[in-house]
Image 1 (tube, rainbow, N blue to C red):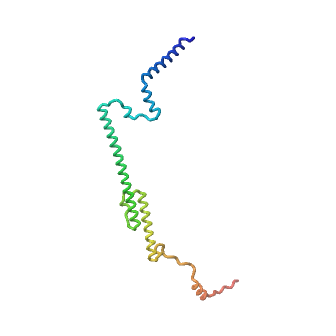
Image 2 (image 1 turned 30 degrees about the vertical axis):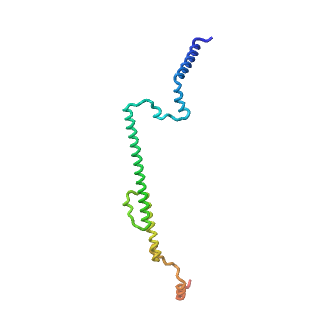
Length: 179
């Protein structure tokens, strides 16, 4: 025999199960609405979720928000394109300056503020390299190797001819008697 408390819990569990079954019978489509999400893993988009007609004020606010988002996206895209164009122009200028420097043209790099520090350093190094190359070319053309490196020092050794003359004119010095 069951006591009163045990009978109440079984009745209440039974009643609860009957209520859930009745509720599911009344709302069979509710399960199907969530089953799509459970099966595919996709959530419903806001357009699919909205079945209620919106008021004109809400529709206007949504349109304004969409317009602002579009403007923001378009301004960001324009800024990105402008930045990319300026980068391309800087690269073209850099390549042009490199070409002009390699041809031997003297260019004041400080006048080009749009160049980065690294690009300026590269151009300065290129200018120095071209100057050295031109000096070497001039030295080869004029057969004057000493201009770059200075005059060569005379060797300490005497020639064979001078050594023979010195031997001929050499006089023996008398050695004092040791005592």
